[in-house]
Length: 210
Image 1 (cartoon, rainbow, N blue to C red):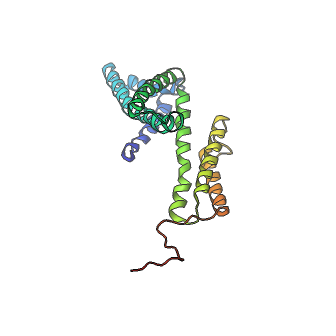
Image 2 (image 1 turned 60 degrees about the horizontal axis):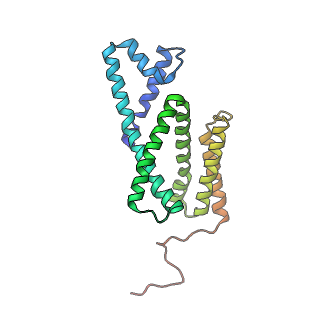
Image 3 (image 1 turned 30 degrees about the horizontal axis):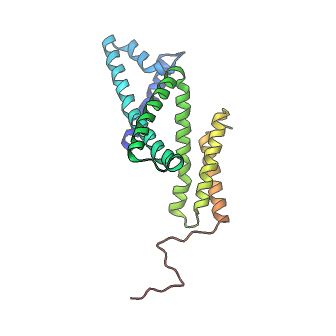
């Protein structure tokens, strides 16, 4: 995944090039194909289109399989149906794959900005783990209630700002604002809750005998 992320800036270059080559383009999703059609012969457009479809299907397939498996094993079985067998989990995951695929396809055809918004919300939500990881590694005073409270508050703030179209707010990205709130909550709640003792720390009231 880290190496795969190296290719992400290429999409930004395509978008910036499209703003110069195709000013006033109505549908931004067609920027790459429109530039290729204006620059290269028709057969090359088919090659780029096929490569783009394949490039989209490979990571999409992995994401859909992961989402369906997590839904079946981490949500349905522990919460809704504890007696579910592995065979039933696999069958539910296969059914969930079809549902997610159809929903994603309909969203891409009829409302592609919705997918972009969901992607941004997902990245903003994952980013809220950053304070807990950093402070947990470098501070012994951080507590579990503080980390969980910070994550919940951070995600709620980001989703509220994103859904109410306040991103950016006062010139700041909504994810950054939520991250600042997250850091503040983690620090405040950790100071108000007792510090947790690590399992590797030696109890001062006990002694180790050789």
